[in-house]
Image 1 (cartoon, rainbow, N blue to C red):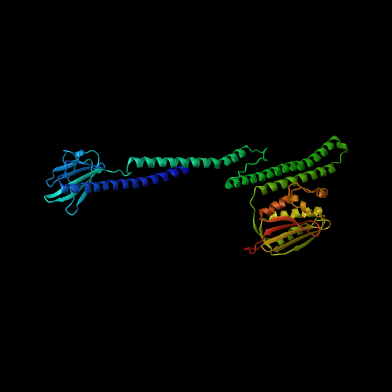
Image 2 (cartoon, rainbow, N blue to C red):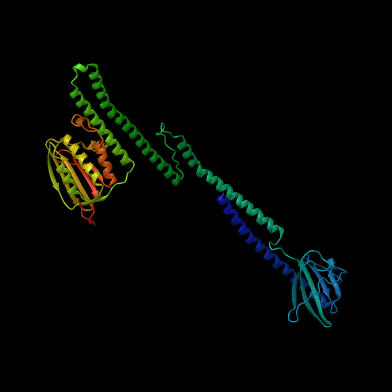
Amino acid sequence: MEYGAVAALVCIGVSVLFLLYAGRKEADAALARTGEAWNRVVPLIRQGPLPSVLAGDKGEVIQVLDAQNRVVAATWQLAGKPPMATFRSTSSEVRAARALCPPAGLQGCMTVVSSKVYQPEGIWLLYVAVPVVAWYGNATALFLAIGVSVLMTTMVAAGTFRATNSTLAPINAIRTELAEITSTGLDRRVPVPGNNEEIKFLAETVNDTLDRLEGAYQQLRRFTSDASHDLRNPITAMRAQVEQALMYPDDTDWPRTAIAVLAGIERLQAIVTDLLTLARLDARAPLTREPTDLGQLVGAELDRRTWSRMEIVKDLQRNVVITCDRLRIARVLANLLDNAERHATSQITVTVRADGSMTILEVIDDGAGIAVEQREMVFDRFTRLDASRDRDAGGTGLGLSIAREIAQAHRGTLTIEDSECGARFVLRLPRVRSHSRPLT
């Protein structure tokens, strides 16, 4: 519709210019006829005598007045009629023209040209009248302009409509397919047209988004299934212990049963706490950021970890400053140390150093290590590798996922990199080169 309106406006503008041109040409032609009448009649006046009825070759009306203002000759329209006009040119001009509506003895508006003819007995007047030309020229030019405008507008509108339908057809197909996609059909994809690059890119982007959505939905389903499984196991175990104790109350070691149930409750509490932490991280809860010396923070956390059964080797560079949420970075360190405790043989190495614009925290254990193809898998929620499941029984399967989420919330990364022995977890965070207040 928009292109049709523009085409109509353009056609109207061109048509108006054409009609103005045609009107101007028609007016010039009318004035030219008055000049031809002058050239034809003046020799007759001077040769004399004039016939009483003159010939009008192209429809012009002619009238000749003698020096006494008597009509001596005229075309048939004014035969026997008084003068059609009373004006004449000034003394310095030979001709004068006026539009009269109508001239005496005639009908309609006409342009009357009065010309002086000098004769021995005085000045004669020659009146030549032609119809007033409209601004658009004549009806033929008007109908031609209207017809061409309507034709061009119709053609442009039809072409625009066809092109629009051709363009919108794949968009409608994409819209229809999207409207039919539900949670049970996330494997469906929108059609990708091959003849329109922009819509092709749109369809490919939509399909990429659907790929990510399907992946996220499958991950959510796995997460829900794993969470249910990890929550159900300790609940089932505690229920069985309590039911057995109630069935044989006299034979039950109640303190031992209470300790076993309490262990299950602690495991449930750990899982629920980690789930709530992940929920807050997924909801992008705001961080309480402040400049922090990472080496000092890690050293303080390691000093409080007095119960560790492993030897912890520290290599902590000071004045390595980051802007962070101290509690959450401490949680990352605690999760990495807990993971290293479960897999190390005898020693854990913790390193803090600066590397250009980044700050590096490394936690390395001397355990069996992690295969390259499994290094990303361990960051999935509720993931515990089969080879180490027995040793990792105390974990919730969420610690490394939480650590990576916290790293990403601080615009950093947490990865597993090559090591001579065991697993080497590397946390990279943006470094702050200057700070405005003392660090704690």
